[in-house]
Image (cartoon, rainbow, N blue to C red; front, side, top):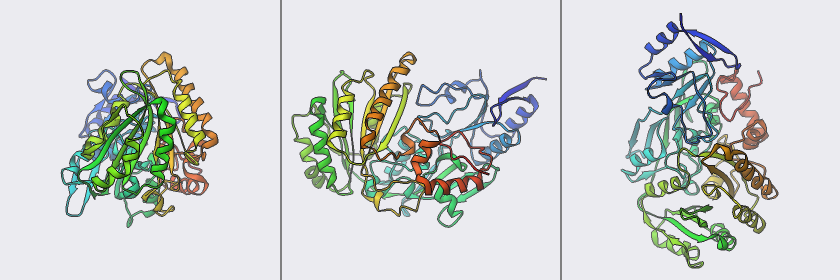
Length: 465
């Protein structure tokens, strides 16, 4: 009798009889894909082409029942599992080698309640899809800066975005979540139910279960002042100093970042990407110094839909390239930090690679620091180095460029990280995302909800029981 070879949670290989797989498939509403079957190759691919893993089987879940069935099957047979949401997660935890991939990409339900200004969205939804639905009612919530990012991974890690200074992080806007735990139970986590679990899911990543739906608070958002202003790289040091001055006194309505990148014609540039969610006139007055700093290569700021803003960054990070990321919060956006970033970027050899400085503060810092597992709310800026290149033969050179710049930035860094922006997520880096007190609290939750580390392919909180 034929059997399917699978990887166990301990990394060993074992066989499952075909009859078991057939029974598993019969219990699913969605498809069960194996190598060679139509749809398998597409399902196993994510945004980052460095991730080239081959699950033994992919469960394309069609609903909560399929997730329950899949978790129980994997648990019973001690199969290594990974969980894919929107398929954007750069570190590649979504895809396992030889195990069972729980694919949530088909869960696309979005139900907006415009009267209550809330929305329920399923775990396979991307922010582009989410914003399309909520903006039909003139509503939005914080949700990243790239529309193709999945809501699940971004929210569970905290959730930066253009609206965070006004409305808090994505996880700050959560009203509740439905999830499947490692022992195959369906639970609800909210301010009224399983409250400690709710705390941990808001920043603790995928350690505590498979979240299948998210309920968010929405906020009115109509036309905004948004877009890009671009200057040549030789203007970058002075431009970033001016950006520091403007953002240092900016109201919560300004959400922005600056990036050092390369334009399609090969020109290296400093790029302001901004959104002002107050009155257009107030936004134009606030941003005028950054627009009149000198003759820009382009000034594309103007009245805009929020959905258009969320689509801009995708042009700087196309799907199917190789990606490697490193990050830290900054002590301050100092002159030396600015000079270090500019000098290193002028030596970059992969033109899609870029450096991002994201303005924090505002509502993020006013939230109760103990309310969520997400930490370091007092940071005013963070930096993100994104190495992007097409050819696997260039991996070592480009990874070394990212690491070299990251090391050069350490004198200006707090040593702490935003967990969603990091490719190197060993134990030390995970602890750097939470601090000792919150990490210990997350370990206690892991001990309670996943003592065997069934959900281990993530920014892992290792249980101690």
